[in-house]
View 1 (cartoon, rainbow, N blue to C red):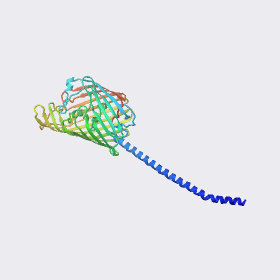
View 2 (cartoon, rainbow, N blue to C red):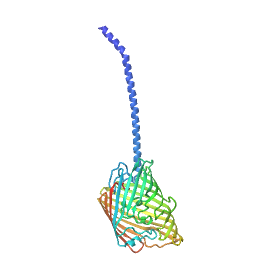
View 3 (cartoon, rainbow, N blue to C red):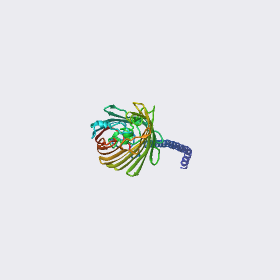
View 4 (cartoon, helix red, strand yellow):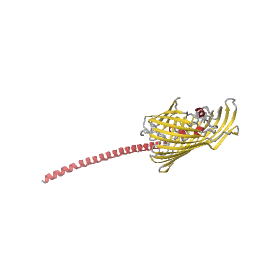
Length: 450
């Protein structure tokens, strides 16, 4: 028995070094595997951190494209957005094609030839375009889509009875750092609020009187050029912008104002929440450049320098989806000096203008109904029109008053009735206008700015 126990002990002693060695080997292998797994997990964490940082940068770039704080509607569409209607809502997915029909019936106490010749002395020789009866402003075709991770492409082609116009076609960057964004092509300037909007977005069927006097019936219109904006990461929404434009607007600049680009704009847009349900949006701007135009005085051409200064303000109150109120106003001041040349005699006289204008309007929404009023006038503070150093007597102060009532059957259909008492002709005659406007939209359409 003792011999068996001794033999077993000897065998166990002989096996122990081999077992300890194998255990040590297993421990080293486990440690090596754990170390390798930790290194792999570290790589995964670093990759995830890169993805998180990229998502944060993308979110910041999207914020730079907003025209107001994140709760407001965005200006540029994101590829993941959902489709909605024409008169507000979120932006859409790629591809995006839409059409807006803008048509209206018009009546006035004036005859068509009187409307056609109803300019504003000292401001514009252009009369009013609408005619008694049925009118078609345009069928606007919208096309927009992401090109790649770096650009979005937009196009707006109004189709009228005279043909197809390329009003806007431009590319916008989506991936620049530090809140920067570049727009290039042909686009509507962000110089002022109404100028950046298409006519079907306006709260009234026609543009405010100061725009008609200084820029024309649709504002500056589509201009070829480039725009740079910056939206710094400040507590209060503040956007800075600069534009270099070709300057083809017939009234303010003219295609022959100078060789090459000869119009420039600078603007600042600010926005802040006043209460939980209301937001204030405001900012100054200036639009300046060389001018050559025949649109100021009949039979005479003006050549010189122009600067149009603007100040805009919008207050929106929106307690819920069924009701809201918007108060909006803009002030424009024109400083212009140069020579006025008679096209028949070629005789020239110096011309110096210092004129202004403003409008204020309010719009209240209750369910599908909206109703509001607008008052606009020229020569509020400034009425300087000096020809050869002598002040000219141009007539009565131009002004208008309008009311509007609209019903939105859906996000795609809008009916609007507007009445305007117009005393902008500088004579004793009033133009009492009645307009029944119908707007229909089909397809996709980007959200409107704040």
